[in-house]
Amino acid sequence: MEAEISLSYKTKKQAKAIADAVAPDNVKIPEGLAIETVMRERKVLTHIECRSSMITFIATIDDLLAAVSVAERSISTIKNY
Image 1 (cartoon, rainbow, N blue to C red):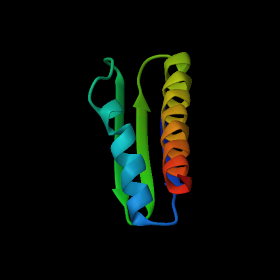
Image 2 (image 1 turned 90 degrees about the vertical axis):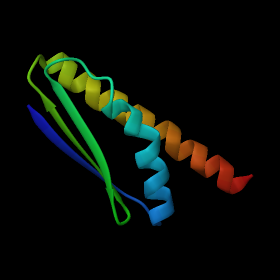
Image 3 (image 1 turned 45 degrees about the vertical axis):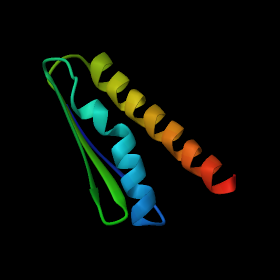
Image 4 (image 1 turned 180 degrees about the horizontal axis):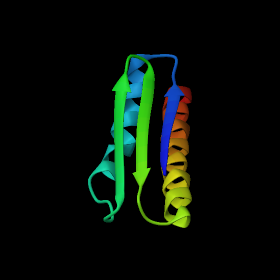
């Protein structure tokens, strides 16, 4: 199973902050799972490949989107501070 998640932001600075925030997820991953997150212009692109279960695949996507949500709220809070 594979997924490509593309998220767009208003600025390159925001995209970089989000990509940097979720990049640690690229390092420690279980066998059978591959995750790569990169920034291109104002987009954060994440490719997920899972050779194990559907549960792992869905949980990985859910974890990624939760981490992105936290990073987005943090950026928003800092901007409004």
